[in-house]
Image (cartoon, rainbow, N blue to C red):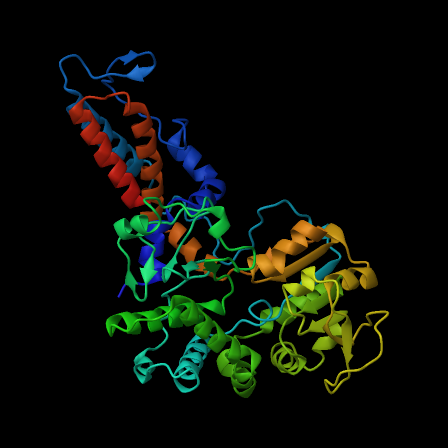
Length: 475
């Protein structure tokens, strides 16, 4: 069974963010290796180079263009491999912090954090537990077929950022230009042929803007899965569809999607997940020594800290005591729980509520946010008014690129940091010799196509088509 998060997506992902990452981070080694052949490509060196017409290369007299094109192809390929010795670009640190905008931490006075998958990192066992519990809810409460009980969570099947077309039951990767990445579309647990995908979308790979989901994954027909908790949801969705298709059971796509979303939601809202983690923190929460070291260092440097999370206080309190110690609240100036993000960042109406030390709600009106106190709900506009923490002196960390970070940056000018554990795996791939050779050869082949497209006879066109096919396969 192919994994949606591995081979299929890497084949469909092309030279998108990975190409950018290498282009930015490996300039020094590539520059030394490639000279100035343009597009980051090796300068071609041919001792017996043919002549040029209008700045373009032409075959030697008497040589047919097909032979000439393949000769240039093999010369270029040899040059690429000769100029990239092993380890030449093994420069990216998988554990490093990367910035896509200039920032001086000396200017940052206030640090904010989400809790789940930001301060608290969970083991992969949690995904299996969420999947199994939601699957059982479908069977026991929604009366889905008992045969679904044979399905288990598939680690690595899906990755964050995928879109799901509810009406077509397609889980797929869509790029920044709204094009379906061919080779990434799945219906159930099986890949959908590229030809069928194109036919389903009216002879094109493009998805119109009005069909796309918004920042929070809520669109009219396409939904985007952005947080790490969505991994078991995507796998369960695909498993149920696989069962129905395999057994010839007709189903309503909208009802199916809603039922699975509700089952996953119940795992969170009804507190089932919180009980598992609280019962066995050693098994579910990854070691927190580094968390304490980071928070303590920031406090020692006179920085202010705050926490905004959707999780309840009792759950956060037990987790932070496990990772940081019983006095964890002394490190934070503000703690806000059950914040209802992303609405917390956009809704002005919901007021703050204070909790006492036992977690019980207080009724007094909140006119100031006090250090050491715990607050529930509220909204960002009151938070800004009561704290005065505005603009680029605030740096907030979260794991959801949209609901945690986008509004804060675009609406309020906060600096933001994304916790993206998947980057570690991606960077390790980038650092491999195979990847570097493939990337450099793809760029060189692109340059070769650009220069040789002037040849329009039938044989030359066939050669160019073969090159374009190879370039697509490399992507």
